[in-house]
Length: 273
Ligand code: NDP
Image 1: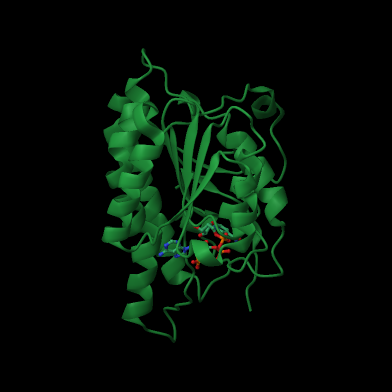
Image 2 (image 1 turned 120 degrees about the vertical axis):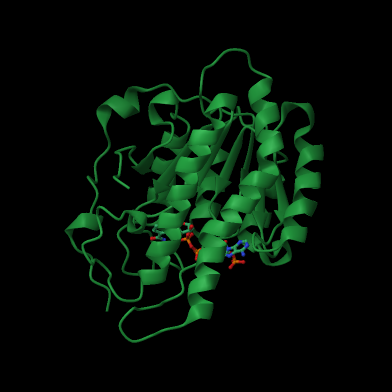
């Protein structure tokens, strides 16, 4: 049985200072794992912003993504098949997205696709499970990000000056409070071991992106969306998808240099790595 202890309960309230910040709207965005759960919720909320001209929602099986496909009446939405664990698929999507975004480049990449495969130190040793988890949640994010970097650079280069802002160029990694080594109090302990490791590796990658990409004025942040009722989060989770993704999408659009390189809950309270 999962047990939610104190450390995973983030300060569950909006920050009035954050809410006062102006939202800035990027022209082009891409989200992975957009057919269900948090990815789909983010797509729905981002489509509410008129300034977004192109929203690329990727998923493994577009032909089965019924709820996402229903949103295609909005012509700004493009649904493209992408398995983040498959290099050929990533390359193919890069070509398609390059054509779609053309000279604007890609302003925002949201690495949302993720998996949770149970593994425990005490009782359940499985190399395959651990490796798959690390692959999808961290290695694949690194490969997708590296592949799409030329499009993020293109978007950034089209703006003069040194300012770092969400409507210029950004990489947003959907992590989890479980990634925090500092906050690991054994909450949900047991089956989350490999998941925690994979998301800590993702946060390490985010920090490295920040170190290497600051010179291109590309913003990099990691987020925990909260404990959300999705296939992954389960039915006992705190939040429904709409609650989590409304806050998350709204605050993603408030990101600027103050947030660069950091890891946040959905209200933009920092989480220690
Ligand atoms: P779901 O299980 O509901 O959705 C996961 C999504 O990731 C699906 O769209 C799934 O696609 C996709 N995905 C998995 N593997 C791949 C792959 N190889 N290629 C492409 N897409 C893939 O999970 P959530 O919506 O809850 O999770 C979204 C993100 O939020 C994850 O990164 C998760 O770790 C994170 N998160 C979730 C929390 C929660 O409480 N729910 C808490 C903290 C973080 P398909 O339908 O094809 O399987």
